Image (cartoon, rainbow, N blue to C red; front, side, top):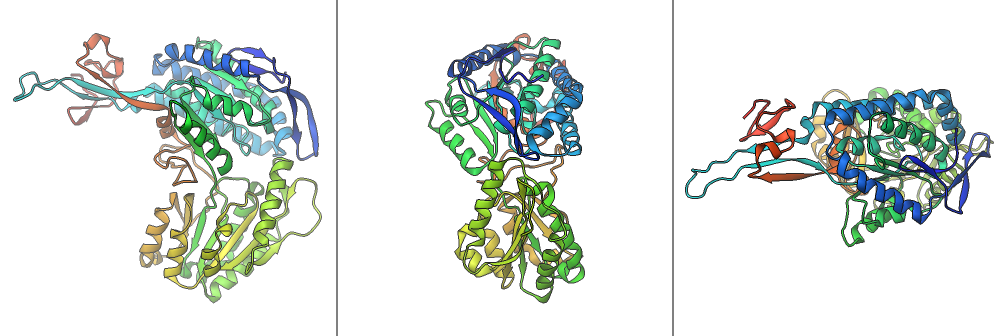
Length: 527
């Protein structure tokens, strides 16, 4: 049942005076439940509980953290159809999408459980003492990752489950040993409350300290700002717009004690079409990309918003095919009136740019909140001169840039802002003749796809979901996969400590049987 209250630790609370409702974009009406925004006192109480919990939770074993994460997964599944129904009511997304995202959320939790249960992720490193070394004796040094402290997580608008209350940021922070305070996204606060109840039930069932998790509601920016500026919060996770992510990043940097803000933000995910691939299969590529551009109404952070090619008859044919294919696809419902409003505004701004040709702009009547797809094209020279054309239009929109030659293609890529992904469409060994283009693309993105589409982010250890700014605020880290745990930890060394006082990960006998680096050799051996 949705109460509309905040979870301050394991207690429901609603002391604030501001309320709001979520919105069903498919039915174009407000949902029935009333949500109470967290007060300043509730924010402070949630952080105070998280700080207290950190002293206990940061020291519990990987096995116990794993049990907690597995219990969260179980309790989310136990929410059953109610979760799926509320998810759809607050997003307009179909039940199948809800089930798929629930599965991904559970899968992430289980992956982190396995990761921390095994334990080698702490990257334990031991350099044993050499007291007789000349001219200076060598001390005993032992290093491992330790948790940063309480983490504030901001739910994402476009993934009510997998990037929100119990999504990748929360799962990875809990796995690292950090209590989490979620600033629930106002577009799906009901979904967030249900998931929060599952997390707290799991915390109780596995004996986690009160304050290991809290869930705060807010319809605006005030609660989020208070969290980022609170001295008890030690790191922030965010998925959303460049404007929102940069604002939080700046707040974190301006604190008396600056903290890391790991924000995954905007991306237009350039797709490079090499000539031979177009000559051999332009129509198939066009059909594939028409589907990718409109998938989920274009509301994915890896949506292909920019397509690059070298002028040719084949590129012209591809452009015509793309327009013909995308007209066949019926528009679909976007997540919220605010999101479709921003899409229409940004699309209109793009379409108004001089020397831009509109290939297709859906004109038929559609239901309220349905996003009308559009595809445009422009010359390479114009694109280079007009940086407005470089900006993301979040929704079912894409721009095809027609470059004069290979050199201009490389220049266009090199002038792009940082991106999450880049894609190369190539036939046979064609790619070997475009080494400079490939190098330029690698310098601007976090992941390169070969002969595929960027939409779709596999959750696994080798996934890199991040990239040079503004794709993310720190390109050294990923927001997806088990390595995302590294955002919430710092390296810490013990010097000349008695063996029995060391954490298990660093003890001579290696009681956890983890892989460690001992005197520059990786081994599971005892010392």
